[in-house]
Length: 123
Length: 198
Image (cartoon, rainbow over the protein chains, first blue to last red):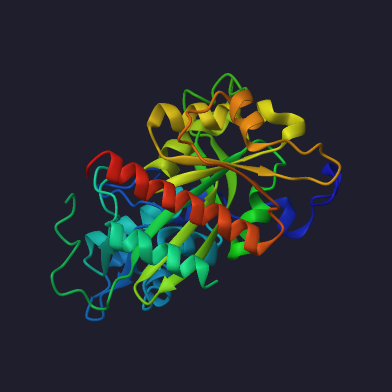
């Protein structure tokens, strides 16, 4: 990051205001999308006028391979709040499947935790 | 389920199971370095509406109520096996982003709190936070060059940690060291789980 007075190109921030791509909406309508909720595109979905934007289309293309919400934000270089609204549009149109993480009270099984340890050992 | 469209019995593709671990600690303690040493690190941005927590820090007088503030964080992905993915999230360093911590902590397995013995007090807020939320955590002391070496017990005492909270020394630049910290945390989570009888 250059000094404060040298913000150029990407350092100067996006050229479009963050919530412009959501047409000014700042809250998703219904659903809540956790950072590690996994999103996958429904192969047979039919786009609606609300989901025809380039950002919606980009998410649908990305999520042909299931991706977490955090990864979608990073790939799209969009903030979390914005991506959540776009995902809500897509979910409302039944264009995506969502796998939400387990509830807080329900930790993964010991078997899964041991798999995590084995996976880390193998890194 | 809050959406009738979600969690279909017949999902289009196999959906991996995702688990997350937080990497916390004071500013400049090596959170980003550790996440980067064990995983492919990526930036994550949130443009949040200023909430009551941040009002007072950011002067919003005379500005429209719809004001966004950007929180930048890092996260990493480790594919454990086909269908099981571990996400690591570095917590935002500044206190004014506490609301983001709640979101990050929700559903997390636990946290690695990084400590620097030259500025041990910097990790107090993280330790407090996870104790209050009863989220399992370990303390990993990042052994910076030039820092005086301490024993785990000295650090435990200085942080007033419960005896069962693991404390280990690490070098966050080393993948092996970061791995050990994460493994130690997951082992701790398993012990806590069986102690709680769940």
